[in-house]
Figure 1: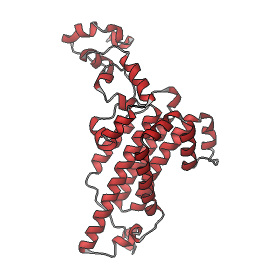
Figure 2 (figure 1 turned 180 degrees about the horizontal axis):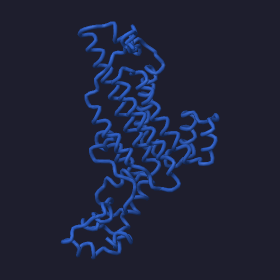
Figure 3 (figure 1 turned 90 degrees about the vertical axis):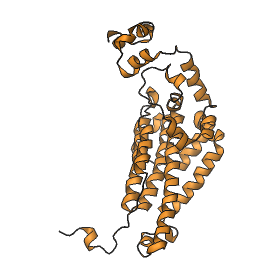
Figure 4 (figure 1 turned 60 degrees about the vertical axis):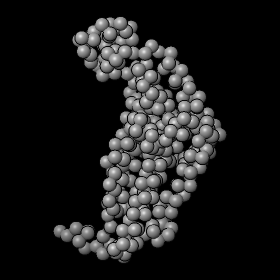
Length: 288
């Protein structure tokens, strides 16, 4: 039986994304940053789905469905806003799951800006960041809603040579800009649930932490997808200050104790170092 590509006059034009694996590796930073706070555990599902939408966007773009790819990027942001809203209104989960009205991203964002302290503080401190994100989202919407010939698939099938190369390059530049922005935005929205992924990126704080399910954002990820200026502002928020203060109140682990607590192993010749901090170890760590 012939494939659709064999019989169709509208075969999709595929696109190359040279850094696809690098972007997926970056997304893993968010996927590994599950919250361990009991009252926010449901948000892990939402951020996992937001990450999946970004990965879908990468695959869709490569296969030629660039308009669908932009839609998936937009949805990663809307899912992130949705989980913060539901985390602030846990009584509304049933209504949300029954597909009832009132869960439009704009409505939820406005509610959070007025009523959710952490969301409100981050939005205020990062006003320029979110203003630029909103402007980018408006540009993404042009592809989603098919405004302008650049959003047409046939625009890439009816040109050849240098013009095609130029059109592909321009689309790649905008897609990568949008992709990186959405990865960073989801990471920041994850911060609003709890700032642990950013706090644990500080080695001094990490060495005072327990064996949390939350993994820290890597320094490369922070620098590449969030940025030093944004991070410095996030660290002035009350939620970050609270986590930082709590972690600093804990005794700093030596390397051997840290290895035992976090990786369930130790070197016999470092037994004395572990013994000196045995009071920091769990029952299972002590048995080991």
